[in-house]
Length: 481
Image (cartoon, rainbow, N blue to C red):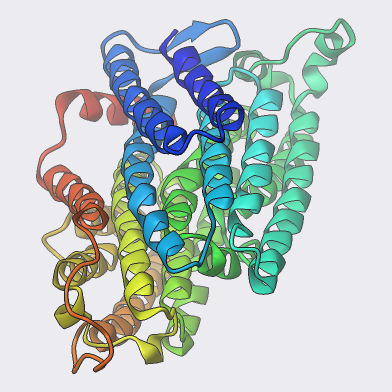
């Protein structure tokens, strides 16, 4: 019942903002209230699933994996919504954006959240596909929010590439329906449970082909190489809070769909096939980013390529098996928190320096001291520097793969070292040095700092202590996949 309330509240929020668009603060108040409500309900869902296991209601089914992702999306929902309020006030004051566009942003943001919650909780792969497609449509308009030619180009690129990818994913989905075609003929709703029950009747070759299409299709949304090409431009042109959500929330949502199909494919042909594919795409993503990182000249692009790398690490974890799955789940949670914080930091830097180019940004520690601290902590965490939690998850993933995939593990280790050097080169140049004379000193507003602090604080806390209910959810996912 809680998930119906969450999705319904976001849809009502979007409708309320549209109907009362002349009311000055309706978009802000409605968005904040709904995001807080969704967070409270998501915690209730997580506790319920941890205590009682999977539960179903109408068109919804929530297991441990979806409960974890719901919690991630809800946490980021509160933080990015609060950040967005002040972020757009500053941009409006400098005539970067108008009131109408800001209200459109909050309408589309509400639809985006509703679609993500539906995607991970629907008991039907068709409904999940529709919801993922809905995230594409809503975020395409958000990427082009500033109505500049470069932003519109990035939005079209994002829309076309992801739509083609999802069409391939839809074709793969239909291939899984072959053993249960009689249900389609009778108008029955094909659920994940029905597919899992009939997985043994799938032709092994068709199952492999189907999973390849699904992995390429939804892998486009995740941003695995070579389906990543929309990410750098979209992340660069999107508003900072949207970049945080694309990387921190949408990535695990799309990966959830891949894992559901992986579960069905493993039942049909065994685990080796899907694991090898995930390892292959994961390895390619990490190596590609390590090659290109030193040549980057835009700090928002830097974060985009970092998301591609971390998508690859998550894919490797699920490809390496049980210990790797545990680490991959933890890594997903950590990445969502840290990368979202980094994007919010990048938003503060952009507001202060009015440039996303690395050559124009230096001395951030003097102009934005708190933002610089959080940005530096985020850099250290995302590159796997001890004692942060992502150091442990990367070590666990490499440990899980070193026995059966020693060459892959060595390549990953070397690539990770290169990525650290590249990240350090860019971040140190941004943070330190003499500040530009024309840039004033001081944070723009406390409400642009608090969201970063909350994300980093939650991440550090989870690096040293996993609450029992979350530990239970993670263990349940490991046991299933």
